[in-house]
Amino acid sequence: MELRLNKFISHAKLTILIPCILLTFAKAMKTKTLKKNKVNVITLGCSKNLVDSEVLMGQLRGNNIDVAHESPDDDFNIVIVNTCGFIDKAKEESINTILDYAEAKREGTIDKLYVTGCLSQRYKDNLEEEIKEVDAYYGTRDLPALLKTFKADYKHELVGERLLTTPRHYAYVKISEGCNRTCAFCAIPIMRGKHISKPIEELVKEVSNLATNGVKEIMLIAQELTFYGLDIYKKRSLSTLLDALCAIDGIEWIRLHYAYPSQFPMDIIETMARQPKICNYLDIPLQHASDNVLKSMRRKISNQETRDIIKDIRSILPEIAIRTTMLVGFPGETRDDFKQLKDFVEEMRFERMGVFTYSHEEGTHGYKLEDNVPEEEKVQRANELMEIQQEISYDLNEAKIGKTFKVLFDKKEGENFIGRTEYDSPDVDNEVLIDATQQYISIGDFAQVKITDATDFDLFGELV
Image (spheres, rainbow, N blue to C red):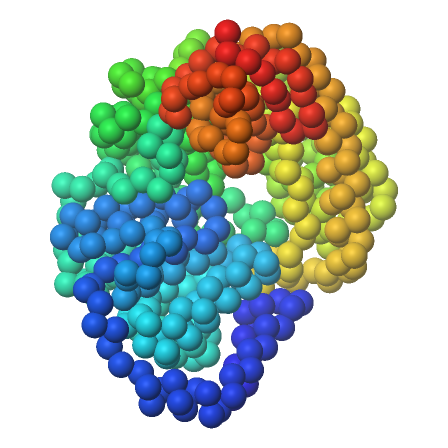
């Protein structure tokens, strides 16, 4: 039997061959697992998806349903896959994960399989047709319906309470859902809908609960942070929210992710400058520097306007670490456009940067354009840009040698304790390593660390 999934995988047709005799045998042998009901939640994609899974698990646990996140044990009989549908590679990973658990269901090692999240929101009809082993598919805003499948009620008293999947000393906090921007390359509005802010009092309650449970650092996440409050307060209200969160005892670091550069509200930076709890860190994805590409991407900003924003941010907060993201290979990106981007990155010297290659996503404005940059060229351009950033990162890290920084320690790996400065977010930024055979620090604690050595993306130090 041939299972074709190319309806929703662009450029890379994912073809799965399952011999009929094996499938027939599996169906014939299918039985209940006889395991006690336990749900295993699998999360794919970004930190926003992770928060959704944590909320889902909190609701299940609140309804006395046994639940785990990506359990290493074979003690569950129900699986919920929270999918990502952002770009081709993410979609392929999500589909392969669903197929793995569909096979487990055919073999009788699990009893039920449910799929939720962005891929399910975007391609529900196709998925239902192609992967029939899944018991039900749910979209990004179908949590109450998913809970009803388990005969569970959505408990409003649990709003703000989650089962953390991160180390207990830090957590992601989603302050809004969806996006009103119309960037040509982005399918998020298709999957997540329009921008909806959470009320300040609800977020204060959520963060207070996290602090009570030992969380010291929160990462504020949204598709577009700067739009926060426009829908419910009729004005941009991120600074007001930040002041409210800074007043919560127990929270020591607040970090900002995903701020849109066009018409950036500078009062955010002013709030950061006067509130010591807010990390000198801003994630502001710029995507490109060529005016031609920025216009085609529908970013509503020019190269010069971008330069002015970065200059203004750094003038108000000189110590800030700016993390950005660049997208290469957008339709029509010429070699001259790419050279402008390289020159821009070399000049701006961003403290942190990630690079993605363009993915031709149906339903987006960019899909109407010819995807005319070859995949090999996209990868080459991404590599060239990261080589520039690697040199910048090494220079900036080397300048930290001999200086002392406040570090939050996340884990121990091998013979090193591993932590981060306020200029670094988990999983994506630099780490600070100290020799665990010579010094000791408790995971989740802050400590002063003197930097003794540096590489491109790591710092080495000793406790002061």
